[in-house]
Amino acid sequence: MDKISKEILFSKDAIQKRVRELADQISKDYEGKELIVIGILKGAFIFMADLIREISIPCRVDFARLASYGAGSESSGKVVMTKDIETSIKDKDILIVEDILDTGLTMQYLVDWLEERNPRSLKICVFLDKRKRRKVSFEADYVGFTIEDGFVVGYGLDFNEKYRFSPDIYVIKQ
Ligand code: PRP
Image 1 (cartoon, rainbow, N blue to C red):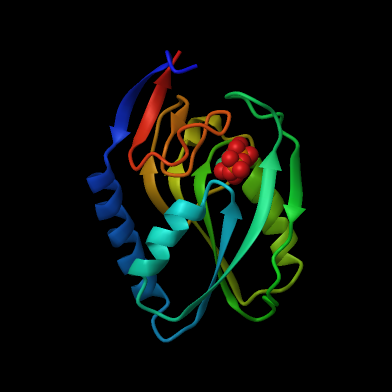
Image 2 (cartoon, rainbow, N blue to C red; image 1 turned 120 degrees about the vertical axis):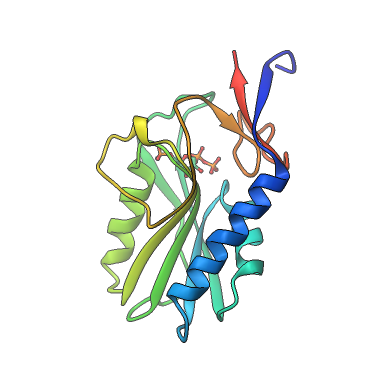
C-alpha cells in the first residue's frame, strides 16, 4: 500500500489561498445574514474547519454523514445516510460544504433530503469538482478547484482511510 506513488496536485499554500478566496466570496454574498453550514462527514471536516474560520458572517454548524459504500477508489453508487443533521433548517440560509463533488449522487441525495425541510436558501460549496464523472447534472455554487479524472487524496479525502490528514492534495498513481 505504501508503495503507491502520488503526485502533488495542490499544495497546502495553494489550498489556504483558495479557501480564503471562497470564504471572502461567501461572506460577501451572505452579508447581513446568518448561515447554517452543513458539513458532510467524514471527508469535509478539514475543509469546513478552515473555511468557517475565514468566513466573517455569523455561522452555525451541523453535520450529516453520508457514505457511498465500497472500498478502494470506486464507489458502489449507493448512497446511505448514517447521521442526519440536528438543526431545524426551515426558513434558514443553508450552505452545504463538501470535500469533493464526483458523480454527484451523494449531493443529489442530500439536497433532496434537505429541500423537503423548506430552507430559505440552499447552496453548495465543494473544494474539488470532478466534473467529468458526473452521473446527475449538478452544479455547485462555490468551487475550490475543478479537477480532471484521477483519484485524489489528502485534505480530508482518503484512500481506504489513508492520506486523509495530509495538508496537501495528491493524485494517486497506481
Ligand atoms: C466521498 C466524498 C463525497 C462523495 C462524493 O465520500 O467525501 O461525500 O464521496 O462522491 P459522489 O459525488 O460520487 O457521490 P465517501 O463516500 O468516500 O465518504 P467519506 O467522506 O467518509 O470518506
